Image 1 (cartoon, rainbow, N blue to C red):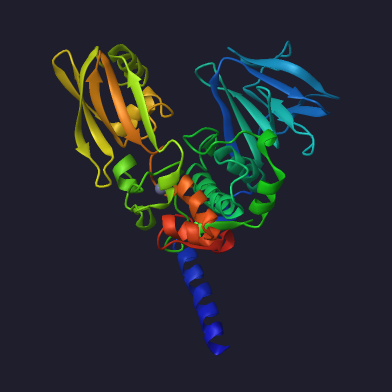
Image 2: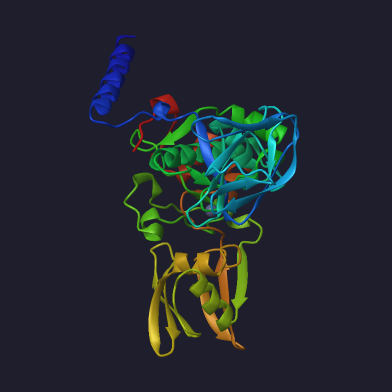
Length: 388
Ligand SMILES: [Zn+2]
């Protein structure tokens, strides 16, 4: 009893010490997350099947309200945002519907509110603000199949919540916290929510991962194909103890373990130019460096007698991350096409989703799965987690 009291006291002493030195606790974050569901669009469709309000974002000034809003196109104008024929001459609008009814953006049903902002480039960005737990209820079945074992669902929920909170902290001064695609985590709105996944997620409510008491970017990916990647190798990020990479034999039986992709030189050249990597027609591709896990780190592209060094992760994003599924590949030229033969799917850092699936099938629980993919991490309630 006495020992427990000492440990308890010590815990609060450390907590208050860290707070004195400026490190915040995760419970100081807002309860809502801001998700960019559309970025830089020329038009966006919106629909509210029930009573709605259009407000000025941030001030809440009422612009218009009504019993319902039929499907209406929103356009950027030189002087503001136009909703159908209504142009309130403002930089952005906030659409509010009753929480239980939801609203539609580009035919996609969402919970929460929607801010549509006209950017400086005269395009529109739509930001959906909703509670973090509602967001997780959609993210998990957007990321993995709803019929996966409950312990794999729970592991994904804790990893997704941790990743979201990390992004909410680091992007707190930006216009939004996360995107709704693979560059953050996939979020498809209310339509993908499913009762059994929501029940499993609720059992993890408020739980996050910490490494050395601190929330970290708990990356995950579909299939590591044998070894997860050290985070430092991919984005040149600083060392994160729990993201050094680990051997994973669990995903060996995953479907589509191997893949093949082929491109013409002109397809590759045009994709690279679109991604801002300037080059003339590519006439040679060599691998210049591998990471210790065996993935390609850097490529040498030959173009008009010049050699261009390109990071493999940038190359993958440029040519299409769902076609060139990972950077674990070999490349050769055959009949005027470049043939890439590879393994796995995704960047390879952190949790391997197919590995988590097979671990859960073998009886491992969510905590054991997370501790396998994020070694030395712990699962705690966010009120006990520090922010970086
Ligand atoms: Zn794996």
